Length: 214
Ligand code: ADP
Ligand code: ZN
Image (cartoon, helix red, strand yellow):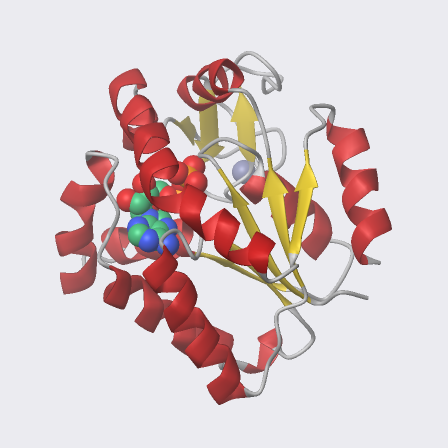
């Protein structure tokens, strides 16, 4: 089994969705820097307060800040069997910082899975996306609606739209992805680590990933 993974792709490409699919099947620890940052905001920490404005504008949080969060998470016990880094690294500098951390922890990266989705689909998905306040389950008003509007199928919690999923901010996040994260993809392609998934159907994507990794 390929156990140490990075999921890379534009916002809305499905990194979070397929992280959830895989962690339900294998003992990966799931590290989403976006989730870690949103948790800091929720707890109203100093880090959270400094990140909130940047996130709301669709800009990246400074490399050193996210790198430190990832390092402490990767060192924890539950990441020994494998990890999925979801949304990190997003700049070449972050990728270099990650290399150093992995060497320090004696871990090796096995695969970088790239999710490729057309821009029009991404914008539709992002602006129609809803998440559960209680359990984090992700729904989509267009593609995967909850049975009752505004209510989570899984736990009955309240659904909400992320503040950075407005059309304007979503467009900005895409721009940031093309400017700052495309070079990261080339970085891993050159290392021979990249596996690209271009399918759009959920089950087809899951099967392609399983075949490559398990
Ligand atoms: P998405 O992949 O859908 O854009 P995320 O939840 O991964 O959503 O990220 C939300 C926001 O959190 C980003 O727009 C950015 O402001 C911040 N963020 C997340 N990961 C990173 C990272 N690796 N480096 C810098 N900022 C990040
Ligand atoms: Zn829920």
